[in-house]
Image (cartoon, rainbow, N blue to C red; front, side, top):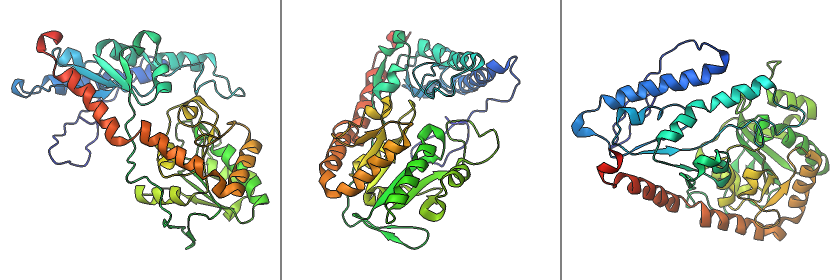
Length: 374
C-alpha cells in the first residue's frame, strides 16, 4: 500500500490510500494530525479487503502513521514494524551542534512528533531497526520487541574493481590509484557534514594541487531545514571556500555509476550527525573504498579508526583535511583498511543474509496460529 502509485512489479498487487488534508488545531500537532489521517486512510483500505483475501502479515513503517490503526482494522493479523527513527531532543541530531541548541518550542515539537509512533509501538507485535544505534533511540520499554537487522548491501554489485573507470562531466576519466577525494549525500546539507567537507576540501586543494575532488548530492534541504536566507549550501560553501571548479559537483548518479565512483576513490568522506546511517557509507566500504568517517555514534557502529577506515571529529575541518591528506599520501599502505571495510560489510550487512533474517521475522509471526492474535 502506497500513498502515491509506484511502478508496477510482477506478482505484486498495489493499493493506494489518500490521507486527505486538514488543518491541525495547534502547530505542534501538524505531524500528529498527518499521521492520524494516514492511519485512518490505511485502515479504511485494510478493512475493505475481502474476507477470503486477508493478509497473513502486515509489514510497515512505524514512523508515518500507516500502522497506527492496522490492528483495529484487522485484529487477527500480526503486524511487523520497520522502526527507522525515534526522535529525541537530547543525545541525537537535535542537540548535536552546541552552537544551535534546541529551543523549548523545538523540544515540545519533537516530543509530539513521536506521538503516533508510540501508539503504533504499543499495537504492533514485533519490529526491527536497521542498526543498533537506531534501536537504542527508542524508549527502553520498547527495545525488547525491536530486533536489529539492516536492509542489506548488494556485495556482488558493490565490490572492488581494479579496472573500474569513472567519467567526469568534463570528460576526464578517473582510475583506481588517482588522487580522488569523494563525498556523497542525497542532498548537500549540514546533517551529512557538507560544510565541514568543503572546508577540508579547500585545505586539501591548496596542499595537493593534483587532488580531484568530487561531491555528489542534490540542492534540496535534505534532513535539515532550508537556510533562512534562501541560498543553497552549495553556493554558500563555494563562496566561502573559493574552490570554484576545483571541486566537481554532480547532482545525481545512477547506482552503477556511484559504484564506479567508489571503486576509483582514494579517500571517501562520509560525515553524519547522530542520525540514520546512509546506505552509501556501507556501499563504499563494500567497494573497498578507504572511508574517512565522522567520529559520531552511527558511523562508529560500522567504522573503527585504523581498523577498517579512518575517523575524524565531525566539526574539525582541519583534522579532517589532515586525515584526507594522510590517506592520499599513504595510498597502498592503507590497503588493509580497504580489505577490512569490505570484510565488515560481508560479515554484518550482506544483503542475502539480511533478507534471510527478515524472512525469519516474517515467518515467525505469519505462521503463528490465529488464536494468538484473537
